[in-house]
Image (cartoon, one colour):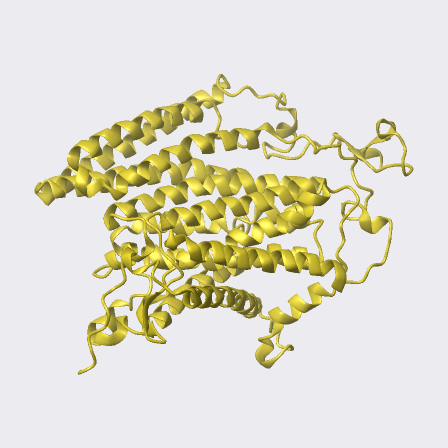
Length: 119
Length: 440
C-alpha cells in the first residue's frame, strides 16, 4: 500500500489547491449585479430557452460511448496478455489472435451498419 | 573514476520505502514543477506562436514577458466570478475541480531520473511507481473527461453542452487508439510500471523499435489534449469557448491549468514510453558514462519533455482545425484497426522469435500477411462504396434535398426555425415566437 501513499497525498494537495482557488475566486473578484450577465452567453442574442434538466443531444454521442465500452474492455484484456506475453508462449498468442478477430467481427458489423458514421 | 559506481537503475522494489518527509517533498516538488511548467509553457506557446505569425508575443510582464502566465493568473483571480442563473450550481462549481485534480495526479508516476541521494537517502527521482502505473494515467485522463462533460452539462447552455459532449466523445474515441498503442510497449517491456518501461529502453528506444505505435500515440496525444488540430470541443468559430463558455475567473483558470498540465503529462508519457524517459540520447550516453546517473538525467528528461511541448505549439501554429466527422473517422476507422493489426503483427513476430524460428522466414510471412490484409481492406473499401451508393444500409433521413442545393456539400438547413429569444422575463416557455431566419 505504501506505493499508493504519494498518489493520495498529491491528490489531496491538488484538491486543496483547486477547491481553494475556486472558493477564493468568490471573494477576490468584484460583484456587480447585472441581469444580462447572469444569462447564458449566446453572442448577444437572448438565450435559447433550455429545458429543465438538460437538453436533448444527438444519439451519436450515446452510441459512441457504448462502442467505447466494448473496445475499452478489449484493451483491458490486451494489457495483462501483453505484460505476461513472454511467459505464456505461442498458445496465448493464438488465443489472443482469436479474441481480436472475434472483436473485429463486431467492429466490421458496426462499421457496415453505419455506427461509425458522423453526418 | 574512483567515485562509487552509480546506484543501479531503480525497479519497482525501490518504491514505497521513502520516509514521510521525502514523500511530502517529492509531492510538493511535482506540484510546483507542474505549476511552473504550466506558467512557462503558456509563455513559450504565446511567444512561439507570435513568432510564427510574425508578431512579438507577450513581452511586458517581467524579463521577456516571462511572468505573463503569473500576471494572467492574478488578473483572472481579480475578475468577477460569475455563476449564471440557469446553471446546476453544485456541479458547476465542482466541475473545474474534477477537471484539475486528475491532471495533477497522473504526473506522480512519471520518472524524472534514476536513483539519487537526497539528504543521505537513496531514492528514485519519481513520485511513486505502481505495477499498473500507465493504467493510472489512462484512468486519470478519463476522470478529467468527467470534469469537461460535467462542466458542459451543468452550464445549461447550448454551446457548453455541445462542447462538453464533443469533448467526451473525442476523448473516449482517441483513448481507444491510445490504449492500443501502449500494448506493444507493454509487450516489449513485459511490465506496466514506468520504471520498468524506462529500464527496458536502455539499449534502444521504443520509438525506434515500435515506430507505428509511437506515431499512433502522437496523433492520439493531440486528440486527447483537445488542442488544434483537434480542438473541436472549444472551436472558437462555432462554439464560442465550448464547455467553458459560461466560466469565468479562477474557475476558468482551473480548466486552463488542467489543459496545460494534460499537455505536460501527455508529453512526459510520450517521453517515458517511447523516448527512453530520462535516459540520455544515444550519442551522449555512448561517449559519456556518467550521463545516465546522478541528477543529469533530469536534464535529458526536461529536454525531451519540452521538445514535445514545442511540437504541440508548432502544430498549433501550423495546422487548421479538422471537421468533427473527419476526427471521428480518423480515430475509429483508421487508427484503431491499424493499431490492432500492428499489435497482432508485433506479437506474432515476437512470439515466433521466442520459439526460435528463423527471422527471415518470419519476415516473408509477415510481408505476405500484410499484403493480404491490405488487399482485403481495398476490396472491402470497393465493396463498401458500391453498397453505400445504393443507400440500402444507411437510409437517408433528410430526403437529400439540402445537399443537392449546395452542390453536394453538407450545409446546415437554411430554412430551419430558430429562436430569437424570450419576449418578456417570466413569460410562458411555450409562448416563444418562432421566426424563420429568412424573414429577419
